[in-house]
Length: 422
Image (cartoon, rainbow, N blue to C red):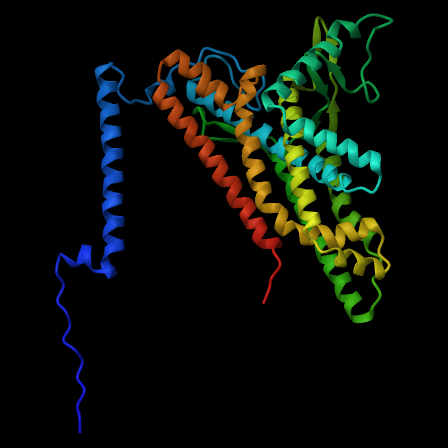
């Protein structure tokens, strides 16, 4: 009878970190990480030493100094006596406004153009092709400058609206004034306003939240929630009986009736722009710089989104379309109910990159005088204070944070709409 015993365990030796394949890869990674950290530490130390030699040690104290410059387009209260931190905050909000508006408009245009490019109508498909090739092969900066030039040169000045027989008139029942200084639209006002919530006191990050807007959003979200419950109930009835009850009027009623009642209670009315002196006053003023930047970024990014949508649709098997057609669905229903839902898993990942590009391209706003975060923190503030390193590093951090936030939200949405496979 033979007895088998385990071989004696080999003791660990330092030479095994190099010659033993079980430890070699980990050794190389640790050495590479240490080398990278040493290089980064040397660069940081060298930079700090050079800045101290120049008499400019790292400091953020300049944020408390008065900005001493104006910002023409802003969402919050601001004047030139506010601090550089307040100016950077206003610029950040302007960046977010352009990014959000641009992403929404570019998505709508991109999906529409992408679908139309696959149209069986020869003329429509060729026009969409020309649009895509024209916009995506010209730098976006040129489109921004061109849009600004067109708005300034083609639209009438405010004085053209003056006189008994004016050269220009207001649009939409004399409620909207389109001029070469911008567009004036009616402003939402309330006789029985609920007031505002003042956050962060009188600091540079002070922010007012309108309770009227909060109440409107709460009622709207509650209405959409009830509307969704009605839809789920209709789906359940359809599965059990095969007949779908008519619920469209119920869903519209639970959404819009509470909103109308709330607006009536708050005394909602519109404040219209009026020509006074040499310019319009009242209403909400959207400057040409904002419109030109918004328009150019939307049209430029829509060309790329259109190609993504077209590729996503073509990725779906034609048999899906034929099967849906055999069930009696029309082309519009086939596209909205069968093709696009399946194409989303192909479309959404590259769409994230285009949203990020649009947000970063908004830094070209300085070309038309729109004061975004690049124009404030990375422009006038940096030039006035001479704090190049601090301003650029903070600016990079802001764009990095915005991009990571967009990626997080879109990846979350991508997982929600992804097809579950077993």
